Length: 151
Image (cartoon, rainbow, N blue to C red; front, side, top):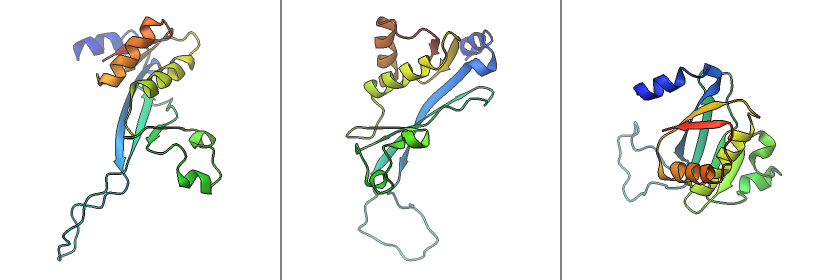
């Protein structure tokens, strides 16, 4: 933690960003309720959507959300005639498990780095293997010009 604090002191609060993803099991029913009768034989739904959240330290810049789902074009987008979430200011990506992977995170890092056009920023994130692999590949290709990452 001391290393992170020391590095953050070299940047203004508006230039220190944090990113992480969270999952939402949208078909899962509550495990507890106020009902007195028990219902047996039901399985928990495992349909998942992952969401990548990114914000700077002073809260002045909240980047668009990156959603990762199982389907390329979910029915709810077709019904509303949406071409993905980009029309709503968010990003939609998909894969079989609805998890973050290296390719999606590389795309996020490129998009993140391109936002700043010469302004140097610090990105704090966890050392999840897909994050680390994506960052290492982009560093080898020298594609990150504005972003320094701390794990």
